[in-house]
Image (cartoon, rainbow, N blue to C red):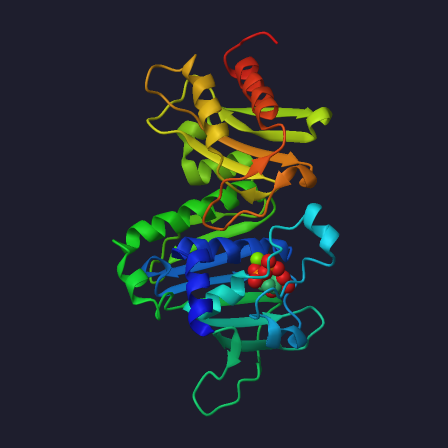
Amino acid sequence: QNVVNKIAAGEIIVAPVHALKELLENAVDASSTSLEILVKDGGLKLLQITDNGHGINRGDLSILCERFTTSKLKAFEDLSSIGTYGFRGEALASISHIAHLTVTTKTKDSNCAWRAHYNDGKLVPSKPGQSADPKATAGRQGTQITVEDLFYNVPTRRRSFRSTSEEYAKVLDIVGRYAVHCSGVAFSCKKHGDSTAGITTPANATTIDRIRLIHGSPVANELVELSVQDEAYGFKAQGFASNSNYHVKRTTLLLFINNRAVESSSIKKAVEQTYSTFLPKGGHPFLYLSLNIEPSRVDVNVHPTKREVNFLHEDEIIERICDEIRVRLAGVDR
Ligand code: ADP
Ligand code: MG
C-alpha cells in the first residue's frame, strides 16, 4: 500500500516547487498575512514555510496527513462553488509519503503550540521509542510546515534533478507570483544560510511596488492598469500590463484564475499576438492578470503538475482582454 501511495505522491509532487505551491496555497487559505519561506538545496533538503494564519486544531493533527483530509469541502455541491485554493486534501498526505514532514501549529484558542511528525500518512515519533503523539511546545499563532529530504525514498527521482539552483529558481518564481498577487500579505523567501532574501515584500506594498520589488523598476515604471468585465461571460479581469516603451525577449505572464496561479497557453498566445502588432519585432510584454470567473464555469480540478486551467467562453473572454490591451496600450479605438 505504501508503495502505491509513494508512486501516487510522486506523480502529484514531481519537483520541490510543487510541494511549495501546495504549502503556499494552504497558508494563504488560512488567512495568513505573513509568509516566511526557507529553502535548502533547491528545496530537496529543506522546504519550510511559516505563516501567521488560523492554525490547526490539536484534535485534527492525528488525521492531518490521511488522504482526503480537508477542512475546505463541506458537501459535494461545494465542488462547483469552491472559493478556497485547495479542496482535494491530498497535498500534505502526498508530501508525507515522499519526505519527512513536521507540523508546528497554534490556533488562537490554544494556550500552547503543538508539534507533530509524519511519515507515510501517519503520525510518527520524533525519535524511535518515543510516543508519536503531538507534543506541546512554545510558539506563536500560525503554522510552520517543514519538509525535509524530499524524495528520500525515491532515489531515481532524486537523481533526476540537474541542479539545486534550477529548483530554487522555480521556487522563487512561484513565490514571486503569489507575492505580486496577494496584497496585504508579507512574503519572504530565502536560501538557508543566505542573509539576503531572494524575495521580500512588505504586507502594505501596492501591486506596482510588489512588481517593482520582484521584477525591477524598468518594468514597474511602464505599467498600465487593466480592468475589464462582462456579466454575460461571468468574468472580471484586472491587472497591470507593460506599455510599448517596454519589451523583453520572453513574455512574462503572471496569471491567476480565481486566486490560483495557473498557466494558460491560449491566453499567452493571444496576448503575444496582440502585443506583436505594436511592439518591435522580437519584443515581448510583461503582464500580471487576475481573472475571476464564476467558479461553476472553471475546471479547477487540475492536476498540480499541470497548471493549465479550462473555462467556459474561453475565446470570448480572451478576446475581451486583448481588446482592453489594444485600447489601453496601442491607442486603438473601441
Ligand atoms: P486541502 O488544502 O486540499 O484541504 P491539504 O492536504 O493541502 O488539503 O491540507 C489539509 C488540511 O490541513 C487543510 O484542509 C487545512 O485544514 C489544514 N492545513 C494545511 N496547511 C495549513 C496551514 N498552513 N494553516 C492552517 N491549516 C492548514
Ligand atoms: Mg492544500
